[in-house]
Image (cartoon, rainbow, N blue to C red; front, side):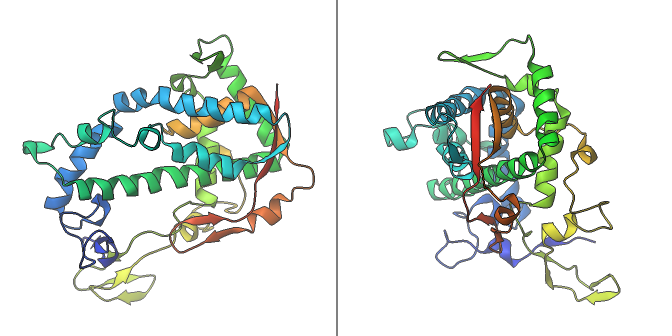
Length: 314
């Protein structure tokens, strides 16, 4: 019994008809024969070796953020806003140079299996969705980690202590006059992954899943017949805060996630700030009121208020 992709996948702004075609993004392709070769082209950008190659660019952007933190000398900053600046910079010089001087787009389109290539329009559609999926979601996820970590000082101190132990007497990556933790060391801090995963569980940045189509003949769900062809979706938040799936579903409990996951950018960012700074909410900041400003716009969570955090060099 197969739940195929629903009609929402095929809706795209890159097609004149509004339906998926050869110029649509990878996400909008329902047909497996069209999706598979496009997916193989992008798979090369996310191999372990490729991710390792991106690390210097990520470190450079984190270094820039640390510079901005330091010049403010302990004054409150909107961490959510600055996280946005960090992740949307993207580690490229596209905006500065006005061209693909590094051959990033060209290199990604050297051809998939059988030498097939993708149109520039389709590459642009893919890149736009990857930026939205990988940048905004990272910003929101780290902001939520800040929310729960700083709300309870014992949670903050616990993770900071784990970072200190993992990085003690280890070789660091240098950028200018500063040192930064290499990502390979951060894989030895399962508690950090637990904090990230718990934040994603309680406030998933992508609040709803795309539609799936009920199989022919229909299916029974919780005693209700869903007719074949019906478009169905379930909000992630509902699944992830259901008491049937998690004990104490509304409680931030990182210990339920002591597993290994590869969240490179979030690891580097969190570890660097925990290692270099003491952090706390700005005086008078109401974390509970701030959490209520997180709004589900039907696709992505939106944060409408400043996340005021004070950073002090350790």
